[in-house]
Image 1 (cartoon, rainbow, N blue to C red):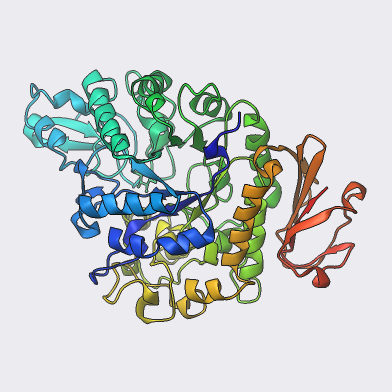
Image 2: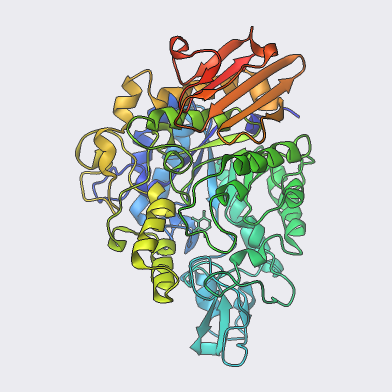
Length: 552
Ligand code: NOJ
């Protein structure tokens, strides 16, 4: 079925790092409003805004204290209303982050809940007795240590799959669900255009909360709670009660999701969500029990995973497409090559590879400039609690040395994506006049939006071109997908087909020139886009990080 959210390109804004309009070193809503013409120029259709709600900021806004208020550092509700209006004026939709697996421990519900066992809000969260003086089970927090925190007041533990300031809500309690649905309607009635649902696959916990397999730090992964027994029932209910009443877009962040489960979350029957974020391709360079490595990508593994999702959901559900977000290192440093010579080339190649697939593409702020990982020097340069906790836990237990851990953090830390957006060559990359809350990547004099908007051969203009193509060619949105050369270690090539028309997408993930023969049937096709000038291309070979798309 044809529908607008399948034809859209989404741009993710991490507000703390986007643009500071009031000189306190922290990005804000006013800053976003100041940059809307930049987004319009890029051509995106939808903005996904990471949380802007009132929060004590233990996890940069993913710990919400009041779902109906705006974080003071970001502005006021009037600022928010103006943002929504200004976006809509430009024909851009707004999708909000919905964080309802947990709240902040400063949310009034939790303040009540922890007071006594018979408090009316007790059952809004997950409380259990300890076992032999220890935690109720072996579950670990996503951010190191156990997923349980002892509370002296009532001599019980509460569950927190994330930080101890993010207690998990009890979705088995119907009152919790009703509160969440009411809050969602409140935002939708303001006119927002949908939700990105934070770790929505974790909301239904397994009966009896059994132990799970231990990871390198001795605890079971937070993914023991993925795809729990009632998750689909709750999402169907949410759909009936809320989502189905509006013309909106929904995407579920589905940590630990399988293909079979995704086909249910994002089923094209419209009974739950529109699409999911799956993470298998983000784990492709990690170990199953440990993400802290500097293992390099083996391309055939990535092709296997992407192809499985492309083919597996075709016709029955819908994919979202992403390389980057606020929880991942920068893709050009990870799957591409961020050295001076190949940074732009490989950033464009990666963009081609992703944007020609079936699904809704997401661009994370700065990705459209080919922004890179950051040369953090010491652990004190980091701000992300996940990175900081992992550093102390894993070095403290002697699992990694400090040098090893710094190397892994430089490669994989979420803070790589969270340094300020690089606007121009002025102080702090034009992000703020004050010292930013997190360091600026020193390469901003070279890599910044102003320079790239002015230069037609930039990564920015390449993304713009990819977005325009998606809007112009139905085959890019709706065509089927077929992988070519599955075992080739350096080339990712695939064909999209719609009716009589075909698209060939060829991407080299390699810094050497490779032999490559164009399939016969594409020889008379039109090149829609390429990261080399056609003059520079030679038949029979692929240049370093070359990418092109041929329409036949
Ligand atoms: C996933 C979010 O993307 C991440 O940033 C956050 O830390 C966790 N969920 C907890 O809300």
